[in-house]
Amino acid sequence: MLDIKYVREHTQEVRKNLEKRRNAKILDWFDDLVKKDEEYRKLLQDEQSLRKRRNEVTDEIRQLKKEGKDASRAMQEAKDIPGKVKEAQEKTVKIKEEVDRYLMHIPNMLHESVPYGKDSSENKVMKEEGKKKKFDFKLKPHGEIAESLGMANFDDAGKNSGHGFYYLLGDLARTELALQRLALDILIEKGFTLVEPPLMLRREPYEGVTDLADFETMMYKIENEDLYLIATSEHPIAAMLKDKTMNEKELPKKYAGISPCFRKELGSHGVDERGFFRVHHFNKVEMFIFCRQEDSWKMHEELLSIAESIFKKLELPYRVVNICTGDIGIVAAKKYDIEAFMPREEEYKEVVSCSNCTAYQANRLNIRYQKGAEKMPVHTLNSTAIATSRALRAILENYQNKDGTVDIPKVLQPYMNGLKRLEKMRMH
Image (cartoon, rainbow, N blue to C red; front, side, top):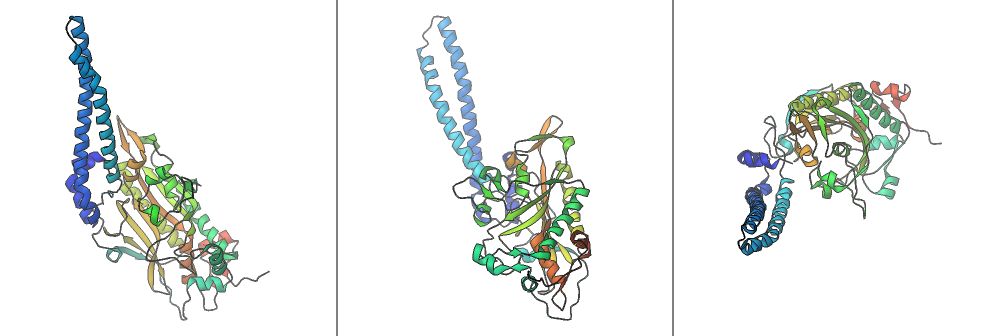
C-alpha cells in the first residue's frame, strides 16, 4: 500500500494517479480518506494532550499538598483523565482502522512510462521477436493434439475434478518437467536462489501481497482454516521476509520459486475444458527480487530480459507489451507482458507477467532495509520465468506437424534424453 505520509504530502498526485487508472469507485471515497486521516491526526493530538495534562496535574497535586493547599479539584481532574484517555484511544483506534482499510484499496503509483488506456486493447506493443512458421495444413487446437497423442486426458479429469483440470501423460509430462528444469538452470546460473515455498498462506500475509479482490476471484480457501492455496510462488516468497529489516549490503535478494499454482479463474473468460491455457492448477517457475529503491527499474528490465531469453531459447515467436493504465492491477507500478504467438488463431496470448511493485508490497508487509540512519521499504519485483501449461500450448501449436506429431524444441531435448519428437503413445 501507499505510505499514509506520502498520501498526505502528495494528495493531488495520488488523485491524478487514480484518474489515470480510471478508478472512479476509489475517487468517490478518496476525499473521505483524506478527511478521516486529518481527523485521526487531531484525535492523536488530543490523546497526547490528555497524557501531557495528566503529568501536569500529578505535579500540581504534589505541589498543592506540599504547600498545604486544597488539591481536591486537581485530584478530581486526575481521576477523570484516564477515562478521557481511554475514550480518545478507542476513537483513535477506530478511525485508524478506517484509514488503513481505505489505504489497502488505494493502488500503487504508476510509473510515467505506463501508457494511458481504458483496457487491454490499448496496451502498447514494444517489440516483436522470433520467426513465425508457415504451415501448409490446417492447424489443430493444442488440447486436441495432446489428446490425439494420448498424452492428455481431459474427460476423466473433468469427471473427477471438474473443468479446468487435466491429466498429463508420458512424454508431454516429461516436456513439462523439461521446461521447469530449463528455467531453473538459467536462473540459478544468474544468481537466483531456488525456493520451494509453502503451498498455503494465512490471510494476514496474503493481504500484504495482492489485491483484496483476489480473495473472491482467484484464491481457493481451505474450509474451516485460516489458509489459502497459493496462486503463485510470488506470494509466499514476498511474505518470507515479513517484518524483517535487512542491511543495505544484503540487497538485492533474488529468488527462483517453483510451485504448483491454484486459481479459481472466475470471470468472463472462463476456463479451458480441453486445454492447458487457462486452468485451475498449473506449475510455474517464478522470479522474485527484493532490492534497494534506486535499483528497481534496472531490475525490472533485467527480469524482462531473462524471461525473453527463455522464449528465445524455445524458438517461439513472441512480443513484449507495456500494460496500460486501465489494464494494470493495483499492486504494480509498471507491468510488461510477454505474449507468445499462437498460429492456429493468429493471435498473441500472455505467457509471462513481469511487474515492478516498488514499495507497495513492502509497506504492507513491513519489509525494510537500513540505509544509513534511516529504515527504507524495499522494492519488490516479480516475473514469470515459465508457466508450463501456457508454454506447452505454444509448443504444441507452433511445433505441430502434418502427421500429428510435435517436434520438441532443441533446447529441451537434452532434458529428455535426446528425444526429438512427441509421437502417439502406445498404451501398455
